[in-house]
Amino acid sequence: MKTIQRILLPAALAVLCIPLLGQAASAQPRIGELRIQVVEVGSRQDFGSIAPGETITLPEGAKVRLIMTATPVNGGRTLYPETQFTDLNRGGLVITKTSVENANATVEVLSRKGRETTETVQYRITEAVSLPANERTGRIYIHVVPAANWNQPSTGGYYTGGASTVPGSGQPIYARSRELVNALYRAILLRDMDEVGARSYITDIEKNGYDGLLHVADVIARSEESRVQVYSNNVTNQQRLDSLYRTLLGLSFNQVDSGQRNNDLSRLNAGDIAGVVNDIVHSDRFRSYQGV
Image (cartoon, rainbow, N blue to C red; front, side):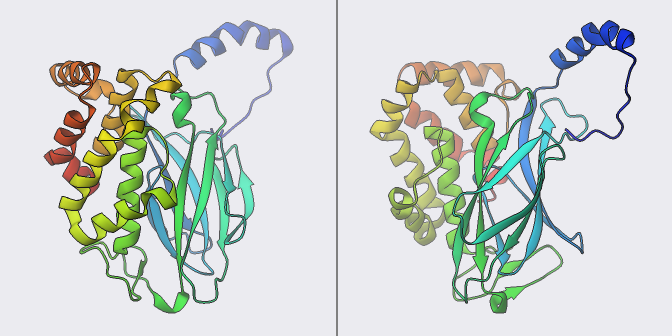
């Protein structure tokens, strides 16, 4: 995490402080939410923040800074855990500068000659923060659009080309549908979606909106991967429930009412993953948190 000031201690004093440092490390706050802030280089304009697995739309030629932020479960100051960012597509973006210690990377969006593309940036949190191992690495997506089709309202950018946009957000429907499908994959299957396998799900949500989302969630929850293959990685039902709460509701396991937790866990132990997912995606909390 970013350190404001470094003080060199005499060797003897440093030895005396070792137990205290150990206590401080063990008292690290448990992380409840990760978000990546996207800020334009130069103007410092804030394009907003996205959660792991989500998509942000930017025009070709944009130069932005990605900043990893972490919010403790019980509140408190925002943390900036040391993070590495990597361009997985190796073509549409250039990471021109990185500062692992300050949890950020400077990214330049290259010109795609008027073509839309979606680029993938992987992050890896290298600091020993209080976070499950499977959440230390993840991806975000940058939807690149032609500069000619870009507007810049007061609340960030949006694409105004041929694709329809989500009412009230200006975000392309495809990008938003893709974002929702990836959230379902991460919540239910504990992995990012594969583009080819998820294409029909994205189309379903594009065409049918919330009803399509309900259908996609049910299909994924009832899949063989959900019912059988997920458990081949030694995943427990409590881990699955924590993934569902965090990704779909924005809540940690302990933030959910204990009676509800116990009931949901009993249903997962009985094999009713589809029923638990169905209740979550029908809930007001889900619709409010996901904006659907």
